[in-house]
Image (cartoon, rainbow, N blue to C red; front, side, top):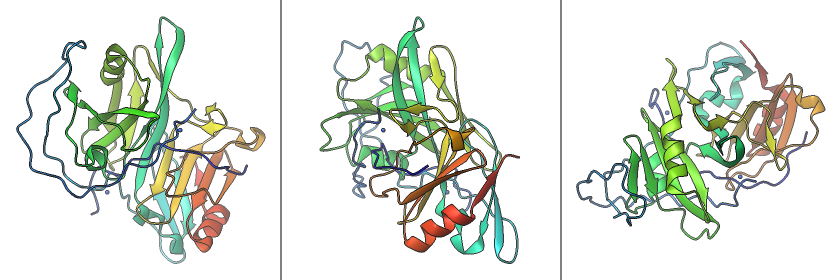
Amino acid sequence: MTAGRVDIIEQGPRGPRRAGIAVLVALAAVSLVGLLIGLLPGRDTSRPAPEHEPVPVREAVTVKPNAVYPEASGTGGTRTLRVTFPDGSPPELTYPAGLNLASLGARPYTGGTLTADGKGGVFRVLTAPLYGEAETAAGRPMIRHLTGGVTLWPGPLGVDTAGPVLLFAFGDWRIALQDERAGMTFEQRLAWAENLRGTLTPDGFLTLSARGPLRLSRPGEVRDGVLVGPQLWLGGLSRRMLVLAPVPDCERQGRASVALDPRHTVSGSVCRGGFYLAASGDESFVRGALRDVRVRAR
């Protein structure tokens, strides 16, 4: 499998700060803004009537990496890294120490579909913005609270095809759902907000689950040639990035690709042992990652 050019919904990392921690709509990454201006007290706009125009609310936003930094084990030239995909499956990676994957930080990615009476559905992807709420806000006020842990924000500046962003707070993690311009209704947004659940593992990874009319994408699920099942994105702050996705029988599945941050074009990909790997960055990193990284279920 080789990865082609794809678009993404990349917004930035956040996450349990343990050690220092696409369809897809054509998006450009939200510009990271370090100007986080003084704020007015937030007012309670929980579950406002949809016919009323919301009043933007400025709230305190902190700039933090939105990722988990797991601790690698091993000595000599090989390292082992235990990670958890957003569906809860816990693979183990082995790799040459020089790749230094543990330092890249890991973030979850998955797709989901909201159905109504078993008919059709609204598909969207869920990503972990590099800098969480700070990157989503980009110095602008929040639109409204949808529920206690879900807020609505303006879409990325300069992207006409993009609509507002639903931002989910699960502990320290911030997970973004990028809507389209002709987006969901208020009731649909509320259904996402009320039916998506997030749980932290003991080592800081975020697992996601859904209930009611919401269904999360299965491992290996493809839409328009793009993998939308559970994935982990390692990296993003530097040129180096490695995407891992469980894809059962991927060797026989044919051509598919992953959605990557446009700041990180896909340089290469490989499918091995039921896991898809896509890497970008300098040549030595890409070559080493695709040749030497091994992923196995545990």
